[in-house]
Image 1 (cartoon, rainbow, N blue to C red):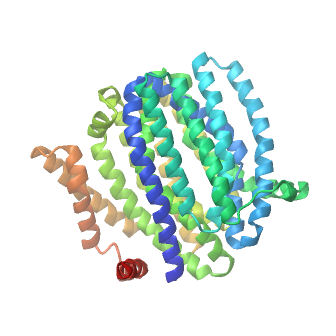
Image 2 (image 1 turned 90 degrees about the horizontal axis):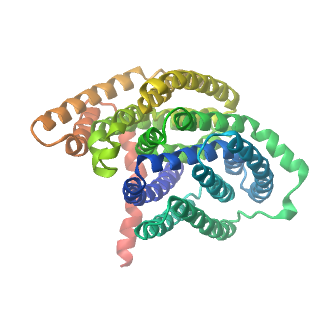
Image 3 (image 1 turned 180 degrees about the horizontal axis):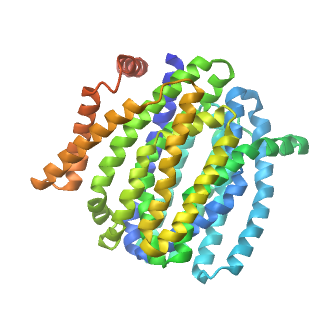
Length: 490
């Protein structure tokens, strides 16, 4: 398993490093942009992103996970998939933009917001084509270049946007800059993908093949649609039911929660092709890799989300400014949902083992619950109501999927793992509150003291077994060997 584990760690590390770098750059950008635009202006950005994300989910249409799964199983199909997936996406873009025009025509949004939506639509169109190259490279388990290109794209976007802000440019100009950055990323992705044998050619586009891929993508598409609805519906509903200022507060809370959950998404991307490969002929390795990844995600999710929740109010004041402090309660609720990070592993398992329909139906139920609760809670509690409408069905789904996946693989339910992590979380909270009373502050305590207490408690409770420690050493051994070799060549 050492080669697979090493690739898994290499890929997750590459994606993680790229995304971490992008996030760190974006933090500086977010501070300046939020202060420059204010909550209402930030609400326009959040609403436009939600609208275009919900529209372009019909362009992606589950084609990316289908391509990743099949290319991971057979690398020789990558060109055929890249060509036909690109053709399908171009056709779907036309249909989606017709629907978007109808929606904006009947909406009561401001003229400025409608312009921003159309600019983001162009940005999403370019990103959809970039996604073909990313899916091909991910299926080939070569994730470092897409991560680097994403980092470069975000760096360019931030640099140009900060220049525009310094020149007192308007929000429309700033949004246009994101299109320029994505266009540069598209050109770079074309070069990188071609060098790695991921090439789209009109000559390979065949109607029967494209229709076959479209049909095969339906289970994935339904899941992608439902999951996007689950993630973006709340922002859209807040923009329809409340003011743009309240939308901006909720969008800020969503961004902070997304930053906390970034590592979870990275691991999910890394394990998907591995699960897919093991499902074909090595069920025992599928069982082992799922069990390990689920455990690590529970430990990481509980600790990271609790630390972020404790630091939320002070962090918002420091990073986004006093205007966004009212978003603290919504941020805490959304950040706590990241404790359910292991659900990413559940989703990867169900999608790679042909259970997309079951996953989609249950997610659809969660969306219905979310919409119903949000419709009732948002007018009463604003951003906090939207956050609660997101968290409650997420928690119910986490229990359901965990029981389902462990039953499928004939693994014992991880009750003891959760109890141990909850005990570690309790001690972490007490330690941070204690240090805050001594004058250290919640933010400093959550960063400096809480994680140490949590990690020490996890180890003291033997949450990680001897096999986990041996696995860590096995993963680190080739990394240390490369470092030693590099030093020897100097």
